[in-house]
Image (cartoon, rainbow, N blue to C red; front, top):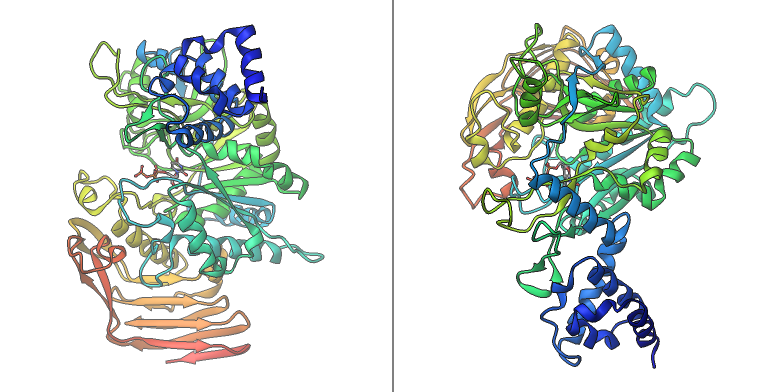
Amino acid sequence: MDSASEIFSSLSITDGWASSSPNLRRNLSLLSPEEILLAKILLQEGQKHLFDHWPEPGFDDQRKKNFFNQVARLNTSYPGGLVSYISNGRKLLADAKAGKNPYDGFTPSIPSGEVLTFGDDKFILLEEAGVREARKAAFVLVAGGLGERLGYKGIKLALPSETTSGKCFLQHYIESILALQEASCRLVVQGQCEAEIPLVIMTSDDTHAPTLVLLESNCYFGMKPTQVKLLKQEKVACLSDNDARIALDPNDNYKIQTKPHGHGDVHTLLYSSGLLKLWQSAGLKWVLFFQDTNALLFKAIPASLGVSSTKGYQVNSLAVPRKAKEAMGGITKLTHLDGTTMVINVEYNQLDPLLRATGYADGDVNCETGFSPFPGNINQLILELEPYMQELSKTQGAIPEFVNPKYKDSSKASFKTSTRLECMMQDYPKNLSASARIGFTVMDKWLAYAPVKNNPEDASKVPKGNPYHSATSGEMAIYRANCLILRKAGVQVADPIIDIFNGQEVEVWPRITWSAKWTSIFRDVKGKVNQRCSISQRSTLVINGQNVFLDALSLDGTLVINANDQAEVEVTGCVQNKGWMLEHVDYKDYSIPEETRIRGFRIHKIEQLEVNYTEPGKFCFKS
Ligand code: UTP
């Protein structure tokens, strides 16, 4: 008798566990002891239907083994295994069927946080505090999403964030982290600073391989490969009914149907990977979470990190002013009848009814500032490492989940399609105690938030006044932010014109871009430009270099400045040429590369002045 049969017979004597599934019972001799234990779990958890179609041993044996390989993966990748997954599923599905409101018993109120104004004295001090802390930070990029709304054939991280420099999102992010690392080390007064800010990228089966290829084929964009770690999230089993019966793949009945579990997986993976402990022993203090297509974010990071450190926030949610009823979650303090409180994101469609049900007769309305008092959550979080670790160790990294079944009819007895449990990164604070220091940092929207989520067709249908969140608006937002920053530093930047690309009306500012190392904070910008500089609307300015200073530059055309780190270059005078023009293209013109046509324009480079400084030294360029 082999060991599998022994286990089987001992299990069968004590439990009679396999009697409910004669088909499985007949096949037990094919299974390893571990697989038999998994089989037992499945039967005990009401999943006998998974074996109803299993033929006698000798038929489909390899496929039966493959089935258990997948079951083993699903069991190990979920905290508490499949038993927990199924039991959580049953509970959440019962709540959903009963129409239970997750906010029953809670009263909303306005949480406390910081509202910052770009460029004022407080902002500048916070940026410096943030840069100082940056060497004690780790960055975590969640990039496992399918990107269905954008519909781009590649991964979103590989898309150019803007097409003037052509740098993709991942390059922009890595260069921004390296620039922060350098700036942070420069602030260390004594001794050598050898900080290497870690970057974790959460991938999924859909994004893992292309993310790795993107990094490897570009030498990790200048980061040490050891600094970057990829953690792959697994999908979870789909559930086909209110009893949480696991669904089989419609195209392969030896495979469990799976779907993404959501970006909340990042907490589980960070915990189970052991990285949090490593970071703690390396003296790190902060973990910063961010998303795949928000190029503006790094303009908001230094000041936000400054807020975390000066306010001692364990959780700091980055936010932007939000118009009442705008389709964006609001950061809200919820107090339960039993006295417990939490500060979390409440989805916009739940905030208004919640307010109305709890004594705010007008629901979600603007206050005297012209904005909702509940700031708009942009899903970028800064967590303090130590309390974060302590909290995750209580749950083995599991965070609150939800389920969103689409029912066939009002009886809620059956689903249109299978469902699954999901979790969101921003729900982490839900379980924190009332004493946890939770806050938010509100930044101007133009500075902090312009994600690329929607395809051109859907973006063009967005109701007027709402953000497009398209490749077009994402790129234009970068130029606008850079122009507004230079304006605030004194440069005379011309007003934008309005144009329409792929059916979206946008402001077109001068196309100004700079490499991350030119500046991480506003004080640097102020030290590198002056009010004697002017830039016309049709201009393009590209600054590649750390020590480039603009003095009385008058630009009407295109100027590209490339300088190595040891070259200090002062640029002055009048530059005028035909420049680079934006040429309209149609997203339905499939002869044009997808990266370009989804923006609705391409850059026609007619004429430019390009200056290059490859040697160390001090230089003055006068046109
Ligand atoms: P989005 O809400 O933009 O979702 O995710 P998405 O899956 O990328 O795009 P759609 O909804 O299919 O159009 C916000 C961030 O969370 C990541 C995404 O990669 C993005 O950075 N994410 C999302 C994950 O890492 N894992 C997930 O399971 C879902």
